[in-house]
Image (cartoon, rainbow, N blue to C red; front, side, top):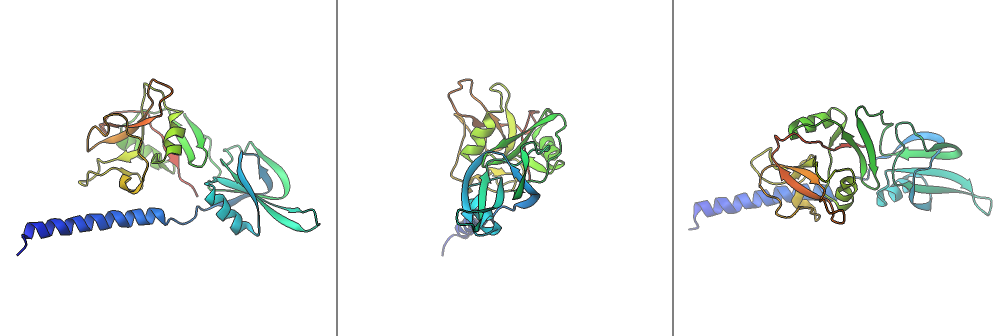
Length: 253
């Protein structure tokens, strides 16, 4: 008769595996991003990732999502034969809070994943193409305080589990001053690294641990830059109680 403790261990392993699998499946089957119409008879001059002739705005939304566009222009124009066609322009970034690159254009509509942003107070707002909109506050807080700060501003500590996010945000991190991002293992007994949405690191292929990291199984992650500018930014584990600068990610619509 098998040992009871062995059966319990096998069952626990199955439960944990199933839970993580479910989380990963949810990540891999997310719905398409939501784009909302923000302006009619207007076109954004934000850099274009790609463009395509489409049948309708829904097809444009799918095309923009496939290119990881943060916004798009949808224009109806006359073609060479005198008929009408719809042009879809997938944009790297959305308009800022002043909509400074939006220009009047007949029969064109501007869609964005983000609402009209409010001017930042004691902070800068940066767009990382294909990734999102991020706030770099001037405050220095511990991890819990930084998390609360972001949440009060319709945002979260930045999700960095991709190359474009880690390297894009690394440009705004001084090599001698790390910034908290949304990755930690300090909230529960699982001791697994998770982002601010509760998604385990094991669900993602990308890693950016620095040399010797993770140095502890429990802690909070800061984004760091090496003094050697030719080396990429990396993740570093620090005690969650340590006050540091941090990066918030604005929630899409």
